[in-house]
Image (tube, rainbow, N blue to C red; front, side):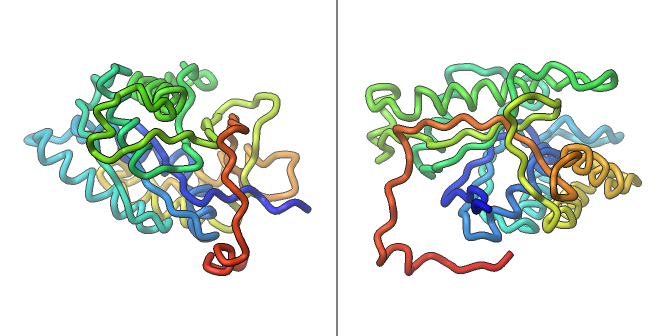
Amino acid sequence: MARPYIPKRAMVIAAHPDDIEFSCAGTVARWAREGAQVCYVLCTSGDVGIAEAGMTKARAAEIREAEQREAAAIVGVQEVVFLREPDGLLEATLALRKKLVRQIRRFKPDTVVCGDPQALWSGEGYINHPDHRAAALAAIDAVFPAAGQPNLFEELAEEGLSAHKVYKVYVISWEAAPNLTYVDISSTIDLKIAALKAHKSQMGDWDPSESVKAWAAERAKGLEFEYAESFRVITFADAAPKPETTAEAATLPTTKD
């Protein structure tokens, strides 16, 4: 059986704290366990996401950023970047695209994970938040072609940030569709749940364990594993990482399933 794809460096771009935990933290945990370096980029700090009397946006942002850092650490992610765009008002502007290009050129991921900008709703009880769609569209536009074009946003070169082409884009998919890639998260489902629970301001009295397992089991239906997350994967063959030399391979961390 072919070894599952594990990126060396992955960047996850999302709109709000907790978006990653709901959607792809099981995959991130598996990649991190296998030695991948992962960076989260949050477009907003979720500053309008705590509906409590007397809560200010500044205090809400502080709480939610702390929760996101805790959630990231649970799955093995140490770097979290907050762009601090206005929560609830996010737009896929050129300014946001440039901010994401800056992060892509700085971190140089071979893989970027983001939402689906075309996902307007899921089933009969959910409309996709406009911030989710805006973050997803900005991420896609930053990946291709912007991040890889040296003559676009030339001023970033003054910051020492050269053009960078991403090899794979993992677009989170909530709906059944042909040609999806399913990642086995059976061994990391508990980490996904623990990371989601770190968002205490959003969970309240709700324990997400059963729901998360039910969603992941539905994704894995008909497959040979218990729990899964699903993605539409776009691969840019011209950006494939170069084969490692024997010396380089010897320095990579070894892990066990």
